[in-house]
Image (cartoon, rainbow, N blue to C red; front, side):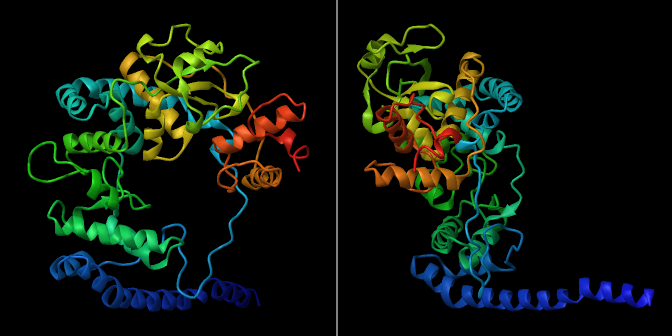
Length: 412
């Protein structure tokens, strides 16, 4: 009887596997048919050669380990409640150990590649320290393992992900890159999300912004440091980087100055912010040449964390990764590399364990009261933050300009 139970247990664990394998095999056949009848004709119509298409898809298989996959016949999983760095614990995003390590490597590499970085700054107007910071954040200065076949990842996601249209465009763009002769399909390595090489460009970004800076006739963001660094700088320049301006400054904002003045659409000359009593937290004066320059208030954690006055270059960095915390990480790391500075001086306070669904409920309540919160998506962007601050002020509350647990019951 004991042996029979063991046998039954083993069978219950292993019997579903052949069926699962059969399902995967059937889906793999659908995948191959999709490439031959759907994707390949579209790629060819867009100008990719048949030879490139055959070579790129030779031996390609679905990568079943990728996230956000929706196999044929299945429905996407419903979005789950989640807590994210932007509105849970910003401090964890700024690991001091990591920032110190990246800054130390960045300073060494600034000396190693000094001539290249100077040439890049002359060409694109972007400081070498900012380029190095992005290089370090994206791929550990080219040292991080980038193990995935970009074609396998993009083809898998174009066939069965939650964003098939996006990855279909990126897959066809990748085929154009191969067709142009810059890289062979087997050498086109990327992340699990399809971003490629040391700058972590998606294929469409590569086609627009990658440059040949070492003069070998090929744009190579996989093994060429000059091409990788110059491509990052070209990206920022094309997105509007303003030469000879900083990204921003950590400041102190007096309690009597409303925190509900945040955002790129409420820009003022830096001198106007200074006239309100806003000062650099270091005690240094703002650069005199920027007194009339367009500047914006930024409070990524409202009154619960460091406060900033930023330039339009801050929002250019956000074009690389649309996150306030990402752009602040890059700015802080660039300052450490260039000037030997340290962490932000103000502390990141606690806002409790806010779920995305909690923020979403607050956004909906604000919209019902006539506020513009931007996207109603559970993410507290600057429009949500300043709307909260305005609502708090009008209702006799001390404005914090940030969704925290104390507002869950108050704002309905």
